[in-house]
Image (cartoon, rainbow, N blue to C red; front, side, top):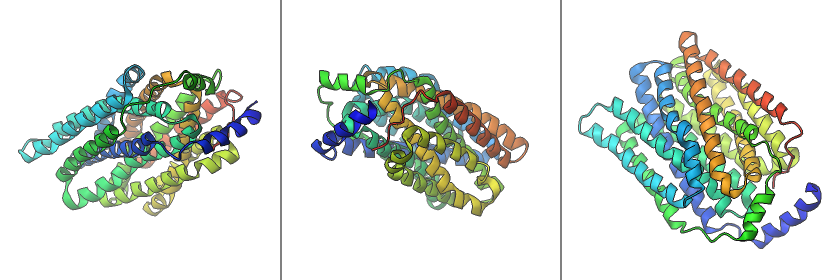
Length: 407
């Protein structure tokens, strides 16, 4: 049934549509800028905490702190995103984030102790991000034509993760040359720029009954959303915990500074961009589900290679990011195909909460192991968890997910 109906319907719909609508053109830069701003704030705060605390656990607690609001509130915010205007919610989140981000540099310039305020600012931004993420994810279902969803989801994932990954590169370079205070000020500007893009997006078009029916019927019938969401959350866990371990690896094990850390994350961003660009071809050849699972397991296996040497790290980071990018883009496309539009906010809110909860738990375990032994063993623990959890979840989904090829 899939092979008979999908190809003929797919091509005419895509040919009849304009290349991109207004929402597509503006949602991608808004997502990228917001992710960049959140990432820059977190990188600068993490460097500050590590240079003063000198322990992996000190950095780990920062990541745990910023994981608490999204882990506890993402599902609730996702429900709100399904009831209210999603563009307005994203706009509010960006404007309030700009105010919160600007408070920290003002506090530092007036002579205040930056430590506690850095934690508080990171906490506030993570709270606002918990509202932005499910609402922005649901905007894809709301604003993007179903025929373009798979390709656009790859671009959206690239924009979001590239913002987070490049934030370390931008943050590391700016910290090295100008310090943290101008960096925190720059962060506030990024949120204002994102708000401008969202404001220019205008109101959502009126929904039609035909579109609602198409959204409801286009999903995978009887799709095991919980297990699919878990696979997506595992990729998020790999990315977030790696942020902690890479800081300690570069600063402690390899005795390098913010500049090298920025280069590492720039290479990771490059790998992720290549993954998003090549995903349609790779998934068309091997199928979305196989591509996503292979990428998740492959990236987890790379954790056993990354801590061997600085040269190995620089060589291995791009393929590791490529693999996790394939996994994230594939799982996002599968989830978007499976969930109806009116439930998209709740689904991605729940997935975000699960991913952050797993990230917090793994961050503590990895940091404790790293502080008691060596950071390489933290990487080994993260890799073993990723391989086993991804393989077990994928095995439980055998025969329950149809292999729809990419565009």
